[in-house]
Length: 256
Image (cartoon, rainbow, N blue to C red):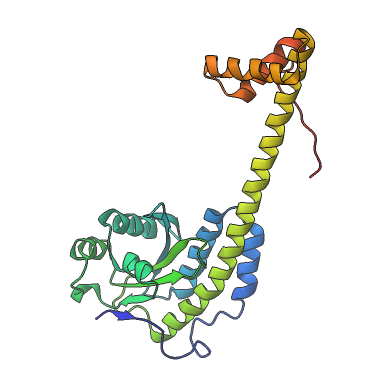
């Protein structure tokens, strides 16, 4: 039987209470410089918190990119393999949860009738139950936490409530990481644009001096050379400067 929806019960008395999860997630945000590294740490933490003697849990994270699912992080090789297999089939419990935007529990793969091709492969790899928990990223992206247990009925009501609370907190942290990453990318793009503009302006000035022409004429000479040679404008500008000064690397300075 497959279970969906909001989990019954609370997490206060669960054996997997996460009283320090907020601090741990904050530390992970501060420690990681990119989204993939953060999600890998997230998968490792989730798997270790739910694993108990006799029931090892593996965790993966799947993200939808360009309308296609991609396994972007995992606690171990087994989780990544299971995620990639499911993505290859194009269907399965985790993708179903992601598309339905609600958690999904498959307590016993031995009696599961849906996704037969994937279930057969998952069982052959020692998986007996699966819990999939979508991450609410508020439009920033679509992602799902995929948990695989080696024992049937490997996730209790308390486990589900714990994972639900964990993913709620994790989603907030992921949104922060995504925004930090976007800001970092924007800063890098700006830095690159400023460097390119500096090199181009220097080359235009050199052409103006050499040809005693206007700025517009010098810029047209530069762009025509770029088009004729099928070389980026910045590279043509750099070659002009190198031919005059011998400098191959142009340092640029601007306020951080």
